[in-house]
Image (cartoon, helix red, strand yellow):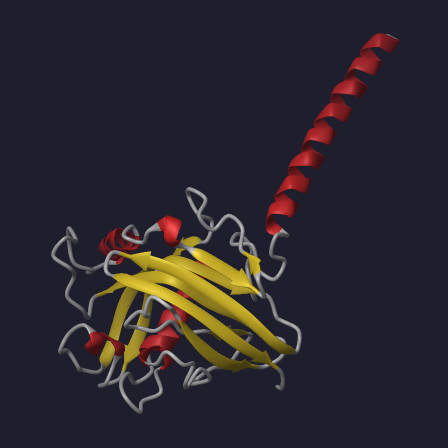
Length: 252
C-alpha cells in the first residue's frame, strides 16, 4: 500500500474515532446534567428499572391502606415512609389521591448507602380490580395486563413531567420516547383486607393477584449523609402530582 493509501486510512480512522468520542461525550454530558440519577438503561443490584418498579408496587400493595394504617400513599406528609423498607433500594411513595395545585411536602429519613426509587407518575393493571370501560380487555394474562397498563400510562401528559434532585433538573425526562418510562414484567403481589384498591372500589378482600405497571420512574444513587430535596411533577386529565421530598440521609 502506498503512502497516500496509508494516510487516507489513518485519516478515516481518526475521523471515526473522533465522531465516536464526540458521541460518547454528548451522551455523558446529557446524563451528567444530574449525576445523582441512575441512567434508565443501567441495572441496580442486578435489577432493571422495570423490575424495581414491580418491586415498588409489590411493597406498596402489601401495606394496609387507610387512616392510621401504615401505607404511606394514604398520606401526603411522608408519614410511615419507612414501613416495611429493607434492602439496597428505598422506596418513596406518591400520594394516592393526588396533590393540591400548590403541591405537598413529604419528609422521609433514608439510611445511608441506599438507592432511592421515586415514582413520578405510574399506572398498573391487575386481575383484582375492574378495568376502566375504555380498556379493550381486562387484565387476565401477561399480554392483556401489558395492554391495559400501557393504555393507562398513555394518559400521562409527557410535557407535564418535571423532576430535580437538589435543584438540578433531570434531563431527557420529556424526550419522545422518554427513557424514564418503563413497563414492569408481570409480577405477583399480596394485599391485606384494608388495601390500596379500596381507594377506587369497594373491594376489601385480601389475597394474591398479578399485575403489570407502566409509567415514569427515577432511580437515585445513594446520596451523601445530610439533607436533600427531590421534586417531581406530573399530570393526567383530572389528576395532578406535585411533590417535594425532603430527605434526611443518615444512619444504618
